[in-house]
Length: 156
Length: 293
Image (tube, rainbow over all chains, first blue to last red; front, top):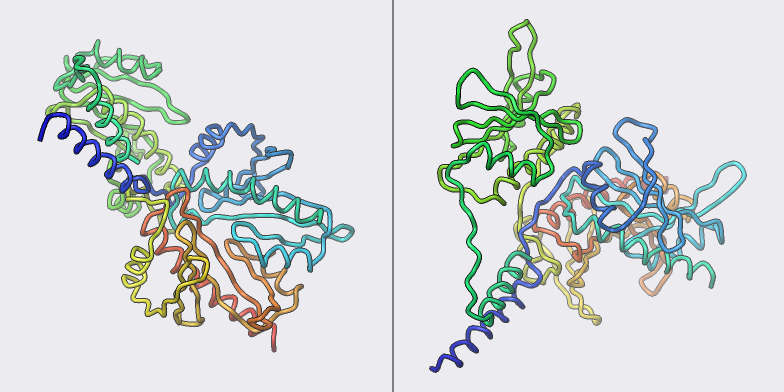
């Protein structure tokens, strides 16, 4: 086998290695997401947020805007993350349940107080089951898609 | 991702011209000048102090809220430590059993008080690169974040980080191995849209797992609840979605949970997700039963 053929064979082998290993990686699995870790990821995603302490110790909220929607993210003592955005239109149980029959990565919940009703579009992830930095990034980015689709759903 | 990067690097090397490669410096000892240069490159502002022993030098610096001391031990070892309030030996032992990179110890300040020291040592004898030293400094701060959470937690210590193989797609074979490891006896069926379902009886519910390769869903069906009760369940709970259906399968309420693999998941994450849903299903079953009374 000439030098050129040997090189080609090695190249083919390396391409196969790339393909087979494309979806696998060695990563750190966290079971608690510190504020620092979360904020570093939000910064990576170019999210400018306003941070505030929650009602309980260890809980923090992050307010930011995504694709024109106001979003609030909660970090509950590093154990779970929560994303939510409120909508005032079509705030009915039927509209909420209909969305939930087709949703995968969010849910709609009707929130009522004495005078008003609104829909909370929300998503949560339980970090204590294990979470990667990639999962956190994807959790935030995917919620953008849910927001857009939900907004279109409400206008139909 | 590491393997892919490595393969990419090899590819480039194969077709690169025969230019000389850059040598990576490996340190088996460090001078104080070299260490100080590394600290400056890592933008660490330190205060240098010298111990009575001629070859022991300290570098005190602050990272986040932590006051760290880096010990230069004769140029052959580095030791990082920081102090926390004293905690019980039991709790310290719990940390030491779970951690891989640092260790905690109860110390005496000589004035009748105690403290908890968290430390990490790097031995240069086998040879370390500049990158390895930077990683050592950074990793210590990351573990201190974890220790701080652990120190504040009232009950069981939070589990610490671990490295695992992650993947962005889960094949039927991988998922079936996870189910087999969990001793789940399932009935498998192929979906028209390319996914696969696995039906199994958990302790208190019949669960269906649907795998679409890039994400999965768990669901359990119950007698149909009115929308107000379903909504209340969602209002009071996290991580799941209660939904009521009227379709060709009949009238029923379902408890659902979804996991996307796209961000990178590991076997343990998938396993924990499946296990956690069994408890969620049990609780929703109890809620439905009570609502139907």
